[in-house]
Length: 493
Image (tube, rainbow, N blue to C red; front, side):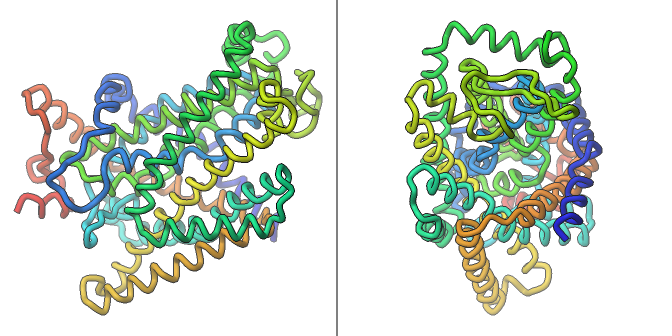
């Protein structure tokens, strides 16, 4: 069974999916005339813009922080080490390229989520399931996406990250894993019981704090190793394009690992971030599209780069040729063997000393993994609510009671999955989670490509209003010929 799941996962996350993600990123970048460049200043400004006339939903910054908490995770530490270890320093350049292009995809999916969002009480719900049903009018595919998302985000992905926390703290502080598991599960329960409001409040405080703290720490490491930084950048650029003397032969691996790890880290196109984007209260969908495009930059260009430069400047990495198993680069500091978090620990230890590097990384991994798990819960809850609305009368008193009961059951299952992962590592669940996310990406990217005309049209509308001197552009779906935007139609009455 394990071999079959691994085989299927490799099929899902094969070059066709990577190629589709890359093609979509290029398509949306060109189609929007590189909105991620032209509106960079607007992206930053809109982070702190909020429509005070709307009572339901969360602020733009809370949606940004919650989506960023899902993007920034253990992959920003471990994934970067893997990319360098198997693809060389040049893999980081390709991560930058896919992040730059992927910001266009992130804009498109977040904008669509805003167009087709729905009001549920004082909350706003949306995401791929909603725009697949209302935009593409393909209910069965929307239901399939929602069902996969609920299963993967509630039972498969949370154990992976809670296991990372438990094993890291157990190895560093010699605390029994089940004790750590109980503490993590208890903290998660306190957060998710409060619903999206509490999750977003925690995210807007913790996520910027952890990202900024990690980046500052990396800058200190760079300052101590300032003389090595220019060489690190030369190695990245030369090996990215096959010009590095020792690493020129693995240019293909640099591209493959950079693109794959970049897509996996920034999640552009995977269909998770738009679930959060839909919850933001804005007066034009493009605003949240721009904000989510910026979150891709923060994830890859800042946080992933922080890890990469630390490893390269301190020379705490090895490069392995996967075809021969030989070492193309051997570090005088980092241990030989499979790349992983040990590289980052070794890099920090050059500054903090032996032992302290592991402690800092354990704490960092806790925050990165914890906030990612929070985001997983919101993804699962939103899609559970969507499924319930398809098969029950969610607006009746009985329906609302049933919905609340299902959400309660989801919370119990979710917290149980977090506890399970803390007690036992399950490689099968990891593969299932990977495969589920891959299937979500296939469905979502095809959907946003088919709906791309609307994302281009609505961007032109936003830009036209800005040119006409409108300070806060408003969205009128009828004027743009967009059907199914029920929330925005209700807002006009």
